[in-house]
Amino acid sequence: MSRSARCILPLLRSLLLGAATASSMALSAGIVAGCADENDPETHVKRLDDPATLAPSVNRLIQFFEDAMTRDNKDRNGPTVKPLLDKIIEPMTQRCVAGDLDERTNSKVIKFISDTRDPRGEACLIKALKDYKPDSTEEDVRWSVRGLGAMKSKTAAGPLMDVFAKLQHGKPKGAGISRDVHDAMLEISDPSWEPQLITMLGRPINDPKDVSALRNELFWQITSAELLGQLRSEKGVVPLLKLVLTPVKADAHATAILALTKIGKPAIEPAIALLKGEHKELIEHSKVENLKAAGDKPGPEAKKAAETAHVAAAALVLATIGRQESVQPLLAALGTAEDLPRAIIARELTKVPKSPETIAAFQAAYEKTPVTLDLPPAGINARVMLAEAAGGFFDASLVPWLVKTGIEVRGEEDDIAQIRDTSMATALKLMKPDQIAEVDRLANTRTGGGGTVGKSMEKEHKIAKDLLAACGTKAECYVGKLGEPASQAKETQFQGIKAAYMVGVLGTPEVRQQIIDAMPKVSNAAVRFVSVTVIDALSPKGDADVATKLQKIVDEGEASKDAEKISGNAPFKTVIYRLNARAQQ
Image: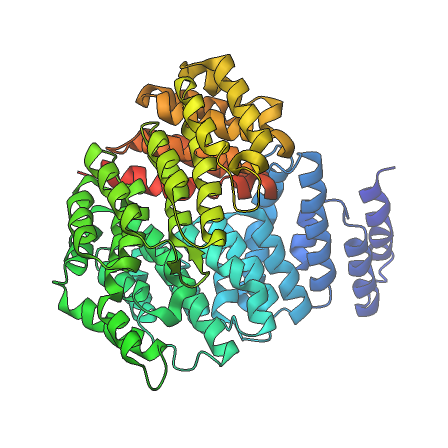
């Protein structure tokens, strides 16, 4: 006898005997309900309408979904999951939107709908955003934004912006969901946000000592800067430049510069006007903000620095964008700049399209830089910084000059030692086979301590010579070396670093694809960094296709959730933005 027959038989017997009283009818109804198929999702869907069975039915339906996901290997469109969702997603959403769930059950439904990534559940997730109460419903918001971001829900744009504006990153619960809100906003990137983002970007930080308020503002402004870049906002260019010119917002500067790079060509004209001293609004803003940062009673030096603070900032923006039209304004500014901005502009020349003129200007700026000049805030020696930056030209013609200036440098022993060591390291990276003897001259130069410059780099020196002996002047050979195990090991990573530099020295634009093809074997972060920098240097006019291929590597790294891969791909973003910016017509 079937289950249904066994359940119905007592009811029929009762009716036939004429004993169908009110109480027996109620009992019989209970029997029928109790005999429903507990493994049928529709049974529990029907029970969602009964307050007495709502909560356990929600739990059972969620369990059905989790079991189906396991059977279908987490495939939300799988043969078990999809038919199940067709039955349950809309009724669950209706219960959520109706607002008659207890707090715990409501949270379970929000998490479930978020996990489904099903657009039919969008209304429930949006309701959770509208119901956001700081310091109370953060967990519901977390699951909502994860689902809405994954679905790229444009309907959620308004409520999501409201959550963003209310979120208190300076408090523990707010900080706990700020990354999820940030990521969802980047996924959705709605153009309607532009005015609010620009307004947020311009808000002052009145009291940097108020840590909670500072953290809030930096979260809002860093995220706003990133989104304006994502939106390619031309209206955001001047506000972003103002942010870069505001010392108290230093933690947001890098994000703002990358946003300007992503915007690309529209940012060039205002940045050039700033560099030339022609953009009065930006220059005045720079003066005011730099004087504020100098304290209540800025001295003559601080006032003088505030007058020219915009020069280095404008140079940094122009060079990071890296378009050809940045070159001449940078060279002109270099010719009139004082020590500190001159050193910064010279460093940035390695990011723009290379030419004999840019190399010569870099060398002249280096030689004018005082041996004792340190750069704020870290206090790194300016010549050390420039000697290292010289490698970014990927030009072996600099090797004799590095050797000569390294040998001839004069000053305090500590300064000299740092400059010679860095000059030696850069020369090793750039030297071709016929320059080994030249670099040996610097290596054998005596130091004040009685040793030689090359003593601390004997291992790297040998690796460089062995690599040059193996590959000579064949760029393809060096590309092959990038992925070798020895190039990934920390103890011998200089092989990979040197190989990447040689690809830059010897390679042509055609070798860029070979570098991209080698990337899966290149796990060492330093080698990956130099390799993608070579692609940048070999793309003076940009290349949207190459940028797309690099973005694919970044996306695959993000999808893998592998922290090491994600970290190793971090330098790709600047190169991707610059390749696209250069390619803009």
